Image 1 (cartoon, rainbow, N blue to C red):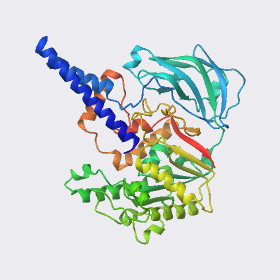
Image 2 (image 1 turned 60 degrees about the vertical axis):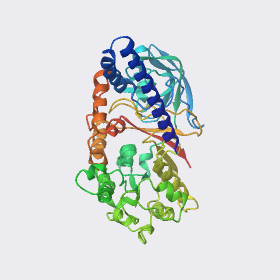
Image 3 (image 1 turned 120 degrees about the horizontal axis):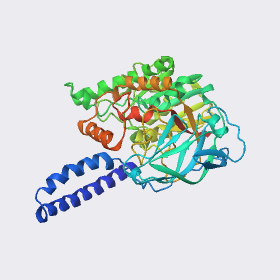
Image 4 (image 1 turned 180 degrees about the horizontal axis):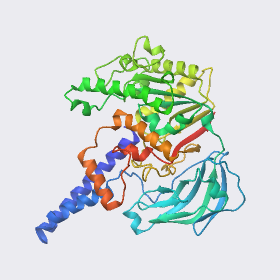
Length: 466
């Protein structure tokens, strides 16, 4: 069981315990006070839960984020004078150089019910956990000019900045001027994490490892049997993985779908020579989902869904594309099993290979501890993710997306079939209550939560040079 599954299990157990205690209290009120009190309080408590306490937050908002940056990230002491970031010594920054401000945030009482946030300059807002009281990391990338001029103002909303601040400056590098290969465990992962990067790269490849065929209930509602629905979903997502990058200018000749089966990568890794059939599609051959590929790969010979075939496919693609920058899931921040295995497969494929990339960029489309990150609204900036243990030193690397690029990214996500089905009624009702009572705004681009999370002012990666 993964750490996130353990956290979810504990969260649900605690919620059931709290529900039982609440029901007993309501029953006691009905017996000893007034019989109608439980009938009044029960719906009010449910509304309060959905509006303010339904987030999956598996840590205390009073905990500090823990980050360890490599030596080439330079720390500078800064002052906060009436909300203005004051540099203690002159500093030269590139226009889009990645800059992170370490601050201590403390929410006020209203910040326990409405999301605390920091207005950064005139056109960015970065949002944090309700009840925040600890170290957090604001993303100041793209604000070099007002920062150097001593004109960058920070304003807390439902929170305040207390104590000292530290400015972290990452080494300047425009990785868009290099050959980039994005590794996507599923169709849409590349777009969620790196559409802005790969749409602007000098040369970009998009390699998708799995067809993402499972959980096809939307297609079963059309009258298809479970296996047939899974095959249809897999074919659609395979098509998405080849065609949607064309919206960003990436030719189909540089988009590849490997067609392995969703949530089977861990089993493949555990038994590298054993084929692992789809859980739901009734398939043990990957070639159905490879039919749109522009090139032949080693795994096409027998279509066997094995770890060894996956490694052979990746080695062939790495040698053909010779990427200078490899973009893939983060090894510790992103807990999805397929994402963990995707990163492991690429690193194993690189062992002993005659071509080696210069830079790894890692992303997190999911988190262990906070299902809402990036917090806040579509179009806002992305602060560094919650991390409570600094086990590895990574340099942050952030790109700024203007409004046009954000809209293009939103349209790319809208083309992805997996983000199109409507949300369940309970989730739609919860969001409506949160909008009315907690001040949360829906995304203008779509109903799926990833439109809010991914269509932002920034794209954020963690960088390591090899």
